[in-house]
Length: 343
Image (cartoon, rainbow, N blue to C red):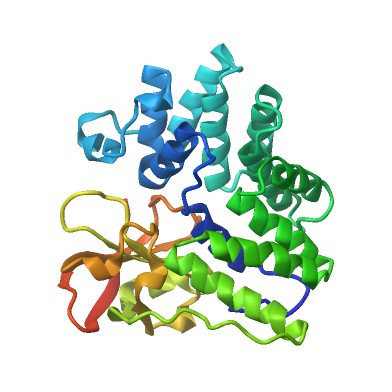
C-alpha cells in the first residue's frame, strides 16, 4: 500500500515499523538487540530468565528451544513477575526496557510509556529509548499522529544518532504529516541507502515513489522478487462464527524444519470473514532478517494464525492452521486451512 493522503493507518504504520525494526542497527546496545529477538520468540520465557538470573545478557538466541525445560507461564503472569522484580530494583535499565517492550507488544501503551519514561530517566540521551518512547506515546494518544510530544523525542533521537534507522523513519513521518515532502524525501532516501533488508527496502521504495510523485520527480525502480510460495488460505466452516462481524490479524509464517523457531518470513494482514478464501504469495520481500532468506531454504514449515489480540505471540483463543512441511521449488503451491482454536 502507498500512503495516499496526509495520514497513515495504524496497521500500515505498524507493518512498516515492524520491517524496519528487524534491521539490526550497529549503534544499538547488544542487550537491546537480544531483547528484541527474544521478545519475538518467547516473551514469558524471556521474563522468566530475567527475573531468575537478573540480566538479559545471560540469555541466548536458543532460549525458546529450552521452553519445555522451564516453568510455563502466561504473558500476564510473566509481566506481573517482572513488575515485582522491578519494584525491588526500579533502576535496572534492562528490566525497564524489557517491561516497556513487553507492554508495547500487548498494546498496553500507557504502561509502556511509563516504563520507557523510567528508562529515559535512567539513561537520558539514548537515541533508541527516545525513539521507542515517542512511538509508544503516539499510540497511547490514539490520534494516529507523531506530531506534538512524540515529534520532540524523535527530533532529539535523530540529533543524537542520525544513523538510527527507526528514528529516521518515524522522524520522516512527522514531516510527511506536515506535508513537508522534500524533508521527508531527504530523510527516507538516506534510510533507503542504509538498509539491506529486502522487505523493508521494497516497502520504503513504495513510499519514496509516492512522495516523488507528489513532487513531480521521476520514480525510482522498485525491487522485484521472485514468488517462492503461493497459498490459498481458508477457514473451516466450524470456525467462521468466531470471526463473524470482527476484524483480526492474520499471520502467515514460514520457519525452519529444524533449528531456530523464529520465523523466516511473515505476512501480516488485517482481515475479516469476507476475505476468505484468499490467495497470498511469499518471497524474499517478507524475510524478517536480511541474513535468513526464504530463497536459501530447500524446505520450510508453513502455517497460519488469526489473532484477535494483535500479539505476535500466540494467545488463547487464536485460530490456527496445522503446520505443513513443504519443499521450495519453483513457485510452490499450498492450501492452508485454519481449523482449530488455541487452548
